[in-house]
Image (cartoon, rainbow, N blue to C red; front, side, top):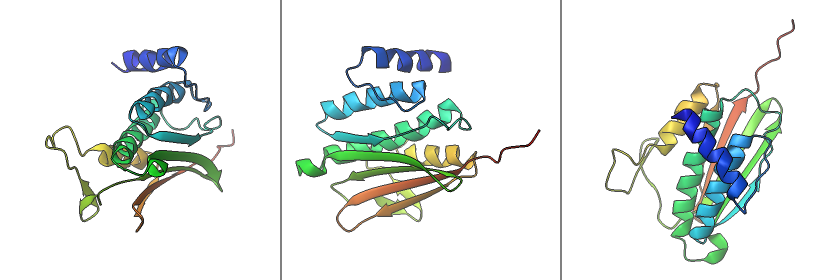
Length: 170
């Protein structure tokens, strides 16, 4: 299943009019799909992603993080009436010895939570409401952290910090 998924994503970028170049071919394919989906839902996506020196994260984990965060962002932003706020912004960068991944999007209704857990508004809770849990599971494999901020003007900001592994001297 993973090979078929990878082939689908890498093939998609060849057919797409959206051609991100992050330095990770699999992520490029995923982003091409998500850019098309966002455009279909009248949501703008702004990307500033450079993953050329990021080789310590398994591709499936990277795709799990980006896919869940982008899907949540597109869905939330698509409900916003103000066209200027119908956007998803994603930025990555290196800060000290950390990979920083930041997702931002506006939303219409305040997300519901119980403690630190966000609750889905969808009826089928078996297949929905697991996106952030999946992201947390992936980043925990790399001793990463996640911070979620919700501003008064209804901006959702998720920041992920993943430490770069220390180079081992041989």
